[in-house]
Image 1 (spheres, rainbow, N blue to C red):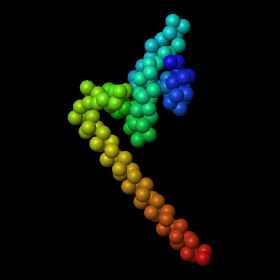
Image 2 (tube, rainbow, N blue to C red):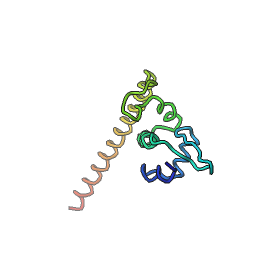
Image 3 (cartoon, rainbow, N blue to C red):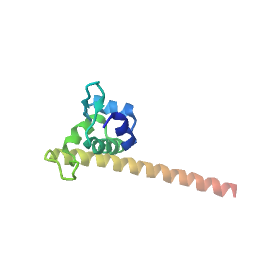
Image 4 (cartoon, one colour):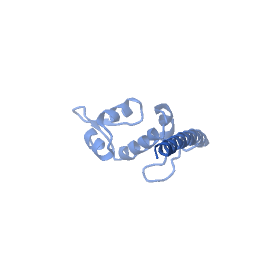
Length: 121
């Protein structure tokens, strides 16, 4: 499939897809006219990339993790290692701390809102 179709199917901009390719996160073949041609597996790959980026994982870590993630057919990759588990556990701990921090911020805002409501009432 061409880059435009991959962009439509994944909801990711063509610019982002080119960035993923530059970072080595995504690969394509080239048509005789030089257009990028992506395999069907690229859809799942882009979804994985988006999930990892949404979790705040950086592109270098994403690059290291992608070969270890589940294959397109859902089976664990032969590249899955204990190192993958360690990296993901560290990333999860970082996300958990960010969640706790946001909850503390929300609690503070709730206190301020409650105080403002009591004073105006």
